[in-house]
Structure formats: structure tokens, C-alpha cells
Image (cartoon, rainbow over all chains, first blue to last red; front, side, top):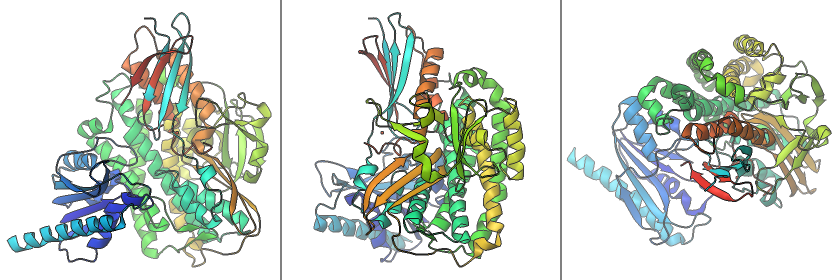
Length: 146
Length: 476
């Protein structure tokens, strides 16, 4: 099962990017995919990821220069930290070390510096559509391969 | 260069941003130490002008760990403004959600933030004193922490509507009745959660003797204690009246209705911190220093009124011959007993017939222009006071957050530990860890506590006798 987690604060402008992508994906045809939207990543979330062979994290990432650019990273970005909310790296670490699970994972981020409002609605919605379509395309290609 | 001031900035493994300053005298001995909350949230101010209906959702955003308590204190304040008495089912469901939050929040503090100190010791290399090392060496303990937190969060999500910032707790009660399937799902998980809680408490009690030095010096001083308590003296997190006791266990003031809190609690502001310093008014500032939270609640309560927790409470109280335990290291112990209590109480409440009632809320319109909501959050007593116009527009807000109540005691605690462990001529990582660890005893949620005008990690600043910073240690 592929799990896509979109996370962010819907009250904080473009920080809600991940949540909005999940809303969009719910309208689209995806097989064998579980969609999770969350305010933040939390430690107990690992229990929902034990059956995942692939995890896709979607969030908004602070960047002053490349507004609305989309980036996909397989590097374990973010710090290894654990408080009441944690990073993708910590989630993967927990799955590896506590549950002997090694899912593939990807982090898709939309670059933004606007965490108070949606600055450019058209650009913002375009980024949501672009990533949603991309994720469906990956799913379709996988179906063809199978 | 002679060192005269130590700064720990940021303080690690706590919620929010803080720094610690350690002041040295002319002989480079520690003479004072303070915790400074360096972030500002400002909810008291920006809530002005909002409609009262927005307050639960707005104030829930003060925290990602204990939003339930904020929603409950907020809705209780609005209950008063609307002159509402929620039905029993609504109250019971609010209580269950609040207790679930006690479970998940206490589990977070013990397993994820504090357990590395207990397992590896306070002098272990700092790269080992973290949950990720725990995952390698004590994977079952790490999993237990995840499972216990997941249990609490699951209840909050099921009954509160959302895991973080729940929406089903509303003025007049709750918005949805509990379904039989939800009740059964929770009841089925209680035995496993209880097993984890009891095993963890036994682990802690078995290892307690290893930390005698810390027990003796981690905020081991006389202070008052405050908490909500039922009229029969039993532990309470939702209803009840306020009680103050002194360090000998004498009741100073009892039966205080939360709406009268301002008669007994003053709020001082220090110029070097955004965290207010509440104090017990009759003793003045700063003599009226008091502590809240799990330790205060168990020092004050005569009984838990649930069987397993009561057996543990007897053992807990016997440590100091029935008198209050004054050492903040015992906050950890108290939190573990409270987890057991919460699990028992959740089961009890779920099994009450009235909890299943369809009648979970009542509605009304603005009747009063002032409301005060109070409950016990994981970290202590929480107050929300709102003033409104006749149309329900908020004109003034006063918040006393649980962590704020402990501000004076936390400062005293930091000073005591710094004096005991910090040698300015040779500052060890173990000493600095203890300075931070004493703050973790209080489990401060500093991002919640700074609204009059905040700590996420720790910086320690060392200052000379002229208050000049001579060394800054970043603990990240």
C-alpha cells in the first residue's frame, strides 16, 4: 500500500498545501493508496504506516526565492527530533528501528514564504493541481507496469 | 577571562522556547539562575474583538499537546456567558476526552522527553540522551510510549472529532453522542494501556533509588500547591473547587470557586520573560509561589477514587509520611500514577449509562457578559476568563496557563540545581543537562503560556557579577 500524507495548518495560508493536495487526490482515481491529512506529523502516526511499502509526505517548505516551485526529495531532510510533532526523517527512523519496516519514501514540498495568507491563488492552485496530477500519473504508470 | 555568567539557550526537550541564565558572583560561584521565556504568543490581545463562538477554536491553537484543556476551559467560560448547564452525557464525554489528553501528554513527557535521563543517567553523553537512542537500546519502551500516546489520541479523535485541536467540544456540551462501537473500541484497548502504564510505573519505582542526588536537589523546597479537587477531597480534572495547601499539607484556602480565582491569584510580570508569574495573593509576590500539575494534584488529593491509582497513591504519599512531596523530581512519579487514574476513570465514565445518552448538548444566547472556565490540564490548573458585549463580542481575555502557575517555582528550581551542580570553572554537560532536566520535571508547555505579550529549546547564558554575558552555550 502507498500512503500519501499531506500535512500543514489550514489556518496558516500556504502552509495548508499538503492538506489541499490530499483533498484534490480524494477526487481522483488512485488504487491501493491511503490518503492521510494531518495538522502535523506525530509519533503515533507510525502505527498507521506499518503496512506501507511507500510513503509520500507533502508539505509546504519555507523558501524566499522559488515561490510555488515544487521539489521532490528522497534525502532525509528535516532534523531528527521528537516532541509533540516530528519530522518525516523521525517517522522513517521509527519505522526502520522499532518495527523493522523500510518503506520507500518521498517528500514533495511546495516552496513558499507565505504562511499568513494565500498570496497568489492561481499559482497556489496550479501547484496543487500539478502535484495531484503527477501523483496520479505515477499511480497509472505503476498499474501499467503491473 | 573570568567566567561570571552562564546561559543555556535554547533549553532542550521541552515544549516552547526558553533560555536559562546563570549568574556568578565575584568568586565565580553561582548566585542566581533564571529561566526566560523568549517567545510571545499574544492570544489575550488578539482575541479581543472576536465573536465568543470562535474562542474554543481560537484558543485551542495555543497548543498542539493540550488543546483539549484549552477547548474545555474555553467552552466552560462560554457556558457561563450563555448561562448553560451541559447535560451529564456532554460533561462525561468532555471529561473522557480531557483524561485521554492526560494519558497522551504524560506519555509524551515520560517516554519521549524524560525517559532517556532515567535509562542512561543524567551524565550520559548527550548524543545518547534522546528517544532515538532509546529506540535502539530499549525498543519495547519506545513502542510502549507510542502505543500509550496513540491510545489517548485515538480517543480524542473519536470523541473530539480531531486528534489535534478537537472540534466536537462545544458550548453547552459536545456536538455528538458516543456510539456503542466507539465505546467498545476504547474499552477493548484499556487493558493493554493499563499494562503499559503499570509496567512503566514499576520500572520508574524500581529505578528511583539511582536518582537520589537529583531527588534531593531538583526543586526540593517548600512551596504552596494548588489544584482543583472535589468537595470530598478526591482527585478532579474537570469540575471541583480550588484548594491551596502549604508545604506541610495544611489547607490554606479551600472551596474556592474557579470564578473567584482573582481574589486569590495575582499575576506578576518580570521584565526578562514573556511568561507571567502568578502567585497566591494572601502571601504576596514572590512569597506566594505555588506549584500546580500532577505533583500538586496528588499532594492535595486525599484519594484518587479509583482502586489501582489509590493503591499507588498510598505508596506515593508514604514517601514523606503523608505530607506533601516537595521535590519536583516526583512530578514524573505523579504523572505515571495519573495515567493509571485516567485509564480507570475513562473506563468508569464509559460504563455509566448516562454517558451513552442522546442528550449531549443544550443551547442558549448571551446572558452574562463574563465567563470563567477552569480545568486541570496535564501541566496544571488552567483558567480562561472572557468578557463580552451583549452581542457576544469579546472585549477582554485573561488566561492563566498551567505552566505559568509554575513560573516562580521553575525559577527557584533552576537556581537550586545550578547552585548544586554547576561549577563555573569546569562546566560539564551533565551539570547543564540537570539544569534543563529540572525544568522538564515541570513538563512546561511554554508556547502555551505566553499570551500577555515564549521556550522550544535551550540556551544557557553565563553572566558575570555585572550581568555581562561571558559565555553562551547553545544546547541544540
